[in-house]
Amino acid sequence: MCEISRFIRFAYNGSPAYGLLTNDAVEELKGPPFQSVEPTGRSFPLAAVKLLTPCEPSKVLAVGLNYASHRRHVEKEEGIFVTVAGRPAPSDRPVVFAKFPTSLIPHEADIVFPVDATNVHFEGELALVIGTVAKGVSVADARSRVFGVTACNDLVDREWLLGDLQWFRAKGSDGFGPIGPAIVTGLDYGSLALETRVNGQVRQSSNTSELVFSPDVLLSYISQYVTLVPGDVVFTGTPGQTQQVRQGDVIEVAIEHVGTLRNRVAG
Image (cartoon, rainbow, N blue to C red; front, side, top):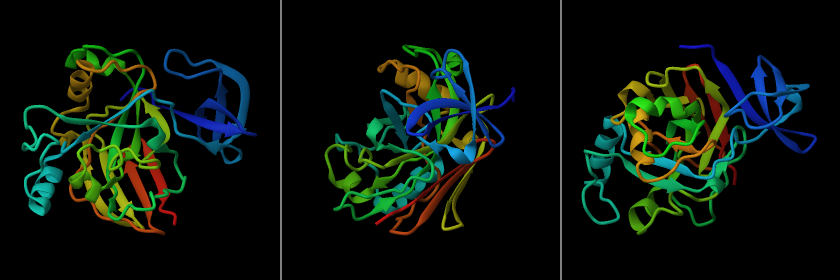
């Protein structure tokens, strides 16, 4: 593990900016930290700023069935998981789909379901944040394209997931992508403990070392088809069993050395 740094996006007096977080102080930066870290000379107490999503991606990619424990649960509860083409999910390549940047909300923001959502589940995950352009990269080169990692919650309405031809609302609805609080650099993201809690009760517990397709394999695969640019985000998959959440539930996704993402389900 290298030296760890934490970067956030925040608003102070309504003005958004990137910042370097050290303990409870935020050092304002001149711009996104992906290529260079240039302080403005201003700093603020963390308590005085409002956290925003930690980056502004042009695209958000996500991966399904990327823990064996989750694949087993889905197959047991719902039968064979099928793709939109009606075939069983492949085992030789990742199951990748797109979310929308507008699905992302920051740490401590309320989750507001679409009015007709009926069966929304949490999915605690590790997210990669891209630092340099990635197009057709090898697995060996993939890590050099990752700026850092953060926690995310790939919320999904399972009725829509199983019933719709496309997943635009099941996975991409506004608010279905809590992410943050910070982008953390300097970590070996291939082996980090991950835990999801609902109202303080542990519902998922795993480690990123248990991913079927590692973060580097995922990034390499995606980059063969889609050009990733600085600030883009890849959700890497969720472990074990997911469960429905309801109004008033507080969902926490805690990742070792990364921190805890917390959001409440609003009315």
